[in-house]
Length: 150
Image 1 (cartoon, rainbow, N blue to C red):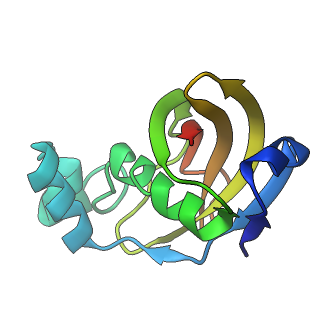
Image 2 (image 1 turned 30 degrees about the horizontal axis):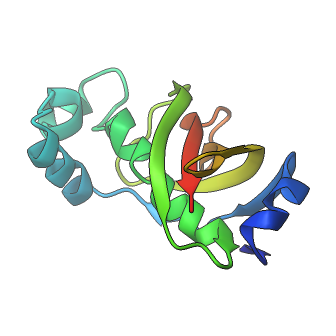
C-alpha cells in the first residue's frame, strides 16, 4: 500500500498517521554474504552456515544493519510525495533490533509519519519504520528515519 501526498505543503496533514505496509521480502544467504563483503562484517553468525547451525539461533541471521538498510526501500514502497525535487537521507534518531532475522525468513516494513518540520533547507520529516518478522512476536527493527525533502 502506498500513500500519495500531493505536495510537501500537505505533509503535515499526515503526521501521526500510518502510511502503509510493504510487500514481504525474503532474506537470503546471498544477500547476507554480499552485505558482509560490502561492510567487512564477516562475523560467523552471519556467514558461516555450518557453525551457525549449532549456534544460538540454529542458523545464520541477517546483520541488523542489513535490515536497517532496507529503510529506503520500505519508504519508497509506502509513501509518494508530489513535487519533491530531492529526498535526502538526513539520519536516524533511534534504532533498535529487538529480534534477529534468520536467513530464509521474510520481513516487511510498516511506515508511519511521526513528525514534519520546516527548515531553511527544506522540510524535515521523521518516519517510524517497523520491520516485521513474519511469524515473529517482536519486530526485527524499529527505527526513526529522518528525511529532508526539497
